[in-house]
Amino acid sequence: MTSAVTSTFLQACMGQVPVRRPVWLMRQAGRILPPYRQLRAQTGSILKLFKTPDLAAQVTLMPINMLEVDAAILFADILTPIEPMGCQIDFVPGPVFAKPVRSRADIDALRTIDPQAQLPYVLETIRLVRQALPPHIPLIGFAGAPFTLATYMVEGGGAKEFTHFRRLLHADRGAADALLDKLTEVTITYLKAQIAAGVQAVQLFDTWIGALSAPLFEQLALPNLQRIFLALEGSGVPRIYYANGATHFLDLLPKTGADVLSLDWRSDLGQAFQRFGRHLPLQGNMDPCALFADPPAIIAEAERILTQTQGLPHIFNLGHGVHPDTPCDNVKLLVDTIHSFAP
Image (cartoon, one colour):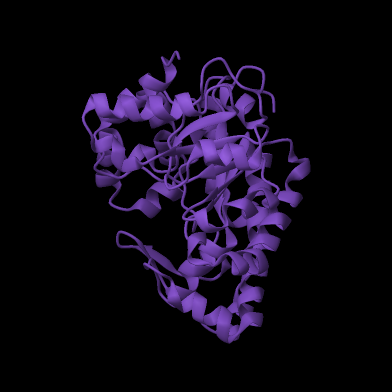
């Protein structure tokens, strides 16, 4: 981690409390910015943005240049490695699979991937961004966690409860395990390729993990998460795990082996530090909808979280992605409030 000395973000990931609290804004922060919307309108396709390194690098850098956050996150999608596995995906605007993965035969037909050969545009985007970033701004790579990827693949797109995958795991546990095993291997390979290309931290996003009960999380998802973080242990970069809707099995999250736990807005950070101990860095967790309040309320909510976590290894972040219609001025106000905070 060559930037560890100068980056407050990486210091916080390592459990060191920086003088200035680092902030970044989850994935999708760029989509609230007018230049991104113009670029999206010009290209006419989000897939073209993902697959064109020059454009993807531009979008990655926009939150750094316009919002002054302390870390950049790669512009890609959590489903990026799924297409070369053999799944046709379109975005209309959300992901839609031409053929959901519903049977053992479908799962057996899925391919493992070679990121160098099949996802070269992602790796080239990483190299372009690293060349453009100041030395003190790290680049974060990411992937979708196996359970979240599986829910999309089996459902055939987005859903509220992802009942198709939950039906599969109860009706044919062997098939569900086989799918998660294959996705775990793909995720490890994909993140290792991102690290080799130059990212300085990686985050695993488990957007739909809250659909599982605590026993099923421990039996079904946790072993695969442990495999991923163990495989990346010697990579020299911080490993972050974001678990959305996981308040009912919060105590199990430290068992994943992640260096940093990212919590959604439903969790109380003060209580989480008490449960996990003061040594484990936490990331989060302001409600993204709080950014629709008036400026004094935004400042008050940010300062509440900052006061609650003062002196602890904390990375300020939203508790989920940025809503597309969030006012840019309010997001900039949040970043400035965090950077100027003095208890």
